[in-house]
Length: 208
Ligand code: MHO
Image 1 (cartoon, rainbow, N blue to C red):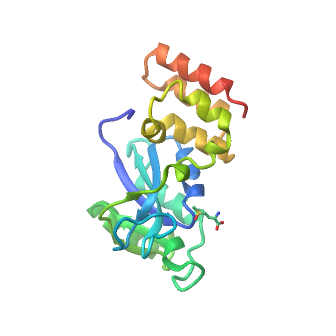
Image 2 (tube, helix red, strand yellow):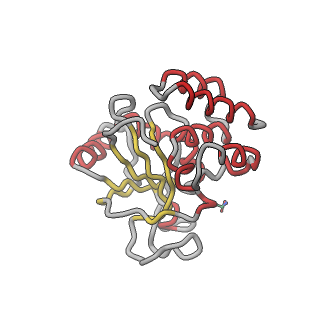
């Protein structure tokens, strides 16, 4: 469930999408992450047959907590854009699919200022094809005990994937944050205290 009514969305290609899902998931200000295929024209892409699409992590964020520039700095500091003709070509290419005028202007400005990479491809966003369940929150799913416990809070897989806390826990599973930092963040949320307690109980039961 969302903490905020208004959020911005970015869609980023930076190689295999498992890592960036956890990387952005751990950042305060990030509300939701999911992974999928975008940027191409092949209908109904899947992991095995994504055609000309690229692996994408899509992020909803609160622009009052984390700026677009912050997000783009993380993007460029955490992958090395490869030439489109290299290994696996479009599947792993560095790609920014802009959603609006702000993104369309900010991306080339940062590249001009030397904060970006000229090897990053830039194109308008049209849609994301969600990847298969097993690719969503991939690193968290390596802790079977985590999913079993979280099922007490989230009644469907979609609810789990869309959850802010689960995005943080996926970042924890990959080693980007600590349980202590996540707990400190939850304490500050405006969620009611019963709900908070329930979340705390569940995440403390997981064998990290
Ligand atoms: N494990 C794969 C990458 C999977 S990612 C979803 C590999 O290292 O080739 O593309």
